[in-house]
Length: 515
Image (cartoon, rainbow, N blue to C red; front, side):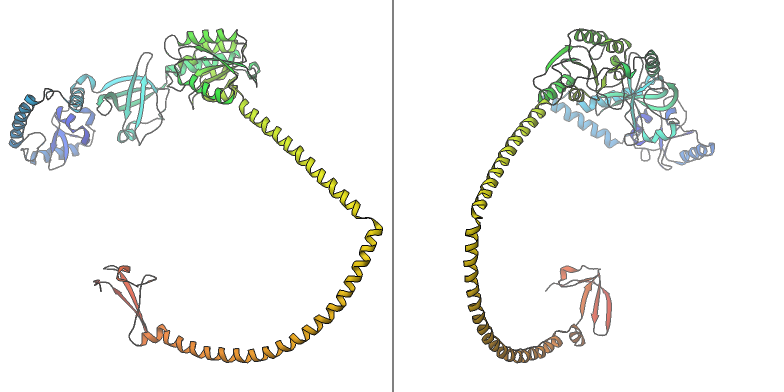
């Protein structure tokens, strides 16, 4: 007796290999552990297997306890009815015998599960395409020189089988089962065991070539050429159908529509990629261009392999024209990035670094010109106005005329002041007398009015006092810190407080009755 750890989603697969369900003990088990079931067997203590054996013997293996293994008679009748319905439907619908996509996908999935050659496969390869843990799951591929194989490590397996730092470019040895994923119609290897072999062959080859080229001085900053600030002709080595050329054209049109772009079409991946890229660099280098952009859009390590080739690196190094690398893959660096005169993360960024924003410069020049013109006009008007003011002041400051005007003004002011003082004195004296008498009478009246109003307010205050009302049997109801002003402010079961004149009552709402 072997106890199995079968996830719910894999029960059909386990049943196909002979697994059985213990309804009483709520576990899966098998009498013989074959290769197909070994994936779900965990080497537990012998006592656990013994308990599983005893529990299985005590469980009634009838169709009531194992519904999944033994369909009922009702199910058989239903199948017969379904067959009759299908026959009737066939007569009316010529396509009724066609299977649905789901049915075909399920059949493919069943065939995958029932094929022993796809179970417990031993395979080794280099990890690639790993972007980090996704909801606890590890999605990646393993590769060799000729092929890629999609893989997944489910989160409930990861903690058990991953005993090393998992990352791209490692070479690993894997045991797993090939599965068909219905949702996207593709197959992948579900990893059940994994071991670290070491750095992948492709990564080792990359590292060795990088070290060799670095020792030869190809990456030396002293060999790098400056990128022209105001180019008139820029060469581009990329695919004419790729996103890279579209991005570069878009940026160039926006920043400097007058610059000439010269494209040399190449294969950016595949068998002819290296040859065409090298030919493109050499062809554009002899044209006397200001700058050459070499690159492509993003992709996997395999798709970017041409830009790690030694021939491409040496072609960039040997070029007399300044070269900007634009291999769009953030987080990774190709060998062409080390040897180029300037490295840009994306083709768009390469265009921005190679082509200055002339349109912005022209706009800035127009703004400066307008500012200078406006400033000169403003200064001229200010100086003219100031000159007119000074002229008027000079004409108005004749000493003889100013002296006579001052003397006449002084006489007028002196007479006016004398007369005004007399008038003001008499007016103020009379007004003071009137105000004095009125103020004395007003104070008396205000005092009596305030006194009577005070008595009325005291009486009203006593009548409005909550405490006075509480003495006559009234209460102040609150729920929490808020007053209860409507039946909608509380619900059945809420605690309320009733404050009366000599204390407080805590109670609970048992019913609410509307008016």
